[in-house]
Image 1 (cartoon, one colour):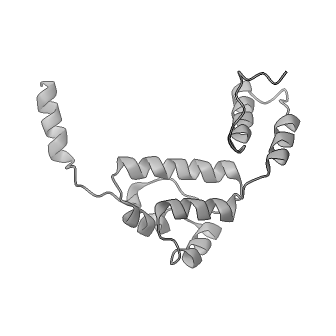
Image 2 (tube, rainbow, N blue to C red):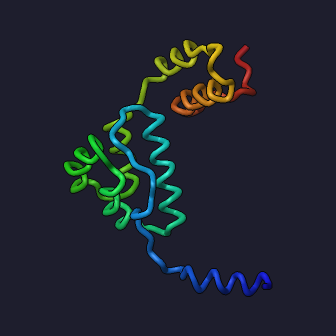
Length: 146
């Protein structure tokens, strides 16, 4: 089979105007109130939304399939006021992972220590997740303040 034949088969099976849905999406959010969980959920559904070619209107309708527990209760009360996907993301962050002031983030970054049972990769990932929450400009590893 040539590359051209493969491309024709793929195009025939997945037309460009196909609209997807969140029906097969495995990402769910239950209202756990921490920044990492919210951002992980948002990142997962943004990628799924893009891959499945889901427009904003259908994505907002399909959120009922992905939100459980406290998040589902929140969504039932908030969905009539949400007008865009960006608005949904902002409101979800505000409701379940409000921004932490920069001074408190710096304190958390400094206080986070690696113990003997924590793998280095996990420790570094936690530090980077805290650093990512800092307001712009985010400090770089290459900037020298001395």
